Length: 212
Image 1: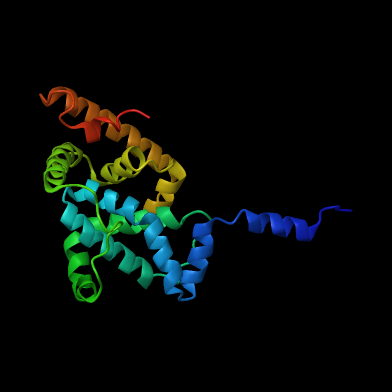
Image 2: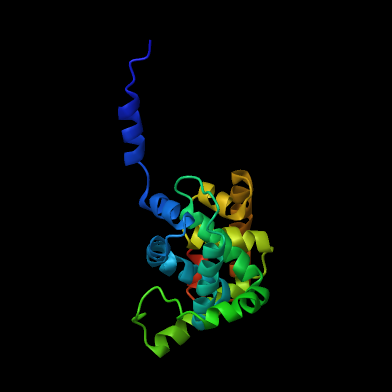
């Protein structure tokens, strides 16, 4: 005969529910404030991810808005525990892939809402932002030599620090595919970096992702 206390077990499981999961549960019921809290929690991460894919801060701001508009449109989706952020990364990946179509689709909606920013002040002057864009575009020049699937995995895992499991959820592919694509991407980028003639440090955003 089992001696487990159902109430204790249920209470323990409830204690383990992540804040994101509780907020998403509320957002699914139409709670805009809960959704806004999720935005505040994850906008910076998604904004940085978009920048790393396009190399343009202003474009990344627009794409950030599109990502969260799409997430709100799809708020009825039931997500596994702990997968709110990976799901947002998945939306962002698709938005970036279909950038022109996504921006056109949401242009009217974007015109009706304030520009979505992870912070009121990015704390960076124009010179720093321009330098960031130049460095990022240098990195993207190498990254774009890879197949699209390898690009997605490299940015999510090497730059975004997503686990294999979370990246697999975001991209809707098996974990083994994530591992193999990341290994091939790192190998290809190492070979390209060693033969491109760039001096060490010219494309740090790519080089930092070689190891790990």
